Structures are given as C-alpha cells and as structure tokens.
Length: 233
Image (cartoon, rainbow, N blue to C red; front, side, top):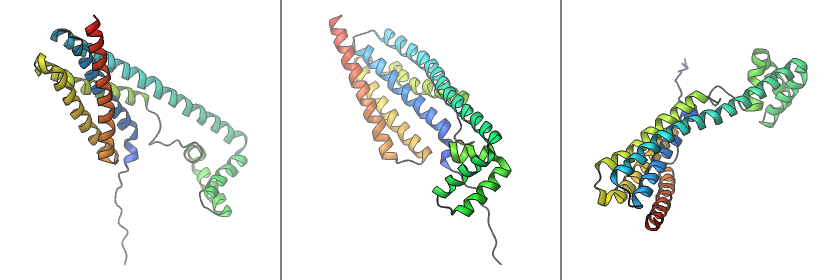
C-alpha cells in the first residue's frame, strides 16, 4: 500500500519583500557612507571631520531609506488596493463577464475551454476576489506590498551597513585611511552580495561581482571629486 508523505516546502519567493529592502539598505549604507568618508578624507579633512561626516551620513541615510521605502511601497500598496476595489466592483456588477475573463486566462495557460470554465467556476465560488487578484492582477499574500516592514528593514540594514566603514575610520591611521576604508568597503560589499544571493537562491559569483563593481566605481568617483575640491580649496 502506497503512503502519501507530506513534506513542507520553503519557497524563496516568500523572502522577496524583506530581502529586497534588506539588501538595498545594507548596500546603500556601505556604498554611500564609505564614499562619503573617502571623498571627505581625500579633500585633506581632519580625522574628526571625517568621523562627523560619516556619522551624519549614517543618520541621514537611515532616515532617508526608511522614508523613501515607506513612501514608495505605500504607493504600490495604494495601487494594489485600488485594483482590488475595482475588481470587487466588477465582480458585483457583472460576475458572468468576470467568470469568462478568468476562464480565458486559464485557457491561455494551457487548459482546455471546458476545464477552464469549471476551474474558474469552482475558484470563484470559494473566493472570487482572491482568484482574480492572484491570476488576473498578480497579487498574492506572498508578494503584497508591506510598507512598514520595508521601511524599518531598510533603515536598520542601512545603519548596519554604514557602521562598517565608520568602524574602519575609528581603527585606521590617518595616513592610510582612504585605502583601508576603500578595501574594507569592497570586502563588505562582496560579502553582502554573497549573503544576499545565497538567501535568495541566486548566483553568488554574479551577485558579488555586481555589487563590488558598482561600489568600486562610486568610491573612485567620490575620491576623485574630494581630491579635486581639496586641492582647489
């Protein structure tokens, strides 16, 4: 006799909401703060001025990330709610047309017409709005917008990422501060890229190379600008 064995499945897409905000926040914290530090240091500023600039960048960046993520994800949530409200009205006013629309979606996905009609009928009988939200609008419990989660995650991870180059400022001698902060920032970015790729099931090498390249470019540009302005001033 065959036994059916149930086993739990953990799909990585469930992490997409917080993972995107976490990677973005930490990456931005490392890149922006390290670039700010390198730019200020390259302008021949004092060690104290460099540290103050880094701390100010950490605080301002954390607040900016929190506000920006909250506002942008809230806009996405407003759009989702508007679409759901419109779909709810259409279901109330013309359920037959909505049934045909849902059945047509299933036909495009490979079901024959009769089976598609039956599937649409049964799903709409159980949860009509849920069926249309998922299969017509692409809205599900896993991917729905969460503004507070995104804002808090981005702020916290930005602060954590920004703290790493700030720590290097504290422990680095003034004479080698720029190269040490730059190398450490790139190492932190490579580690972040690897962790983010691992958590999301992506290619580790590609993700690591991508964040390291753009981080190196940002550091080089700000160091150049700092050196130019430092010379002029």
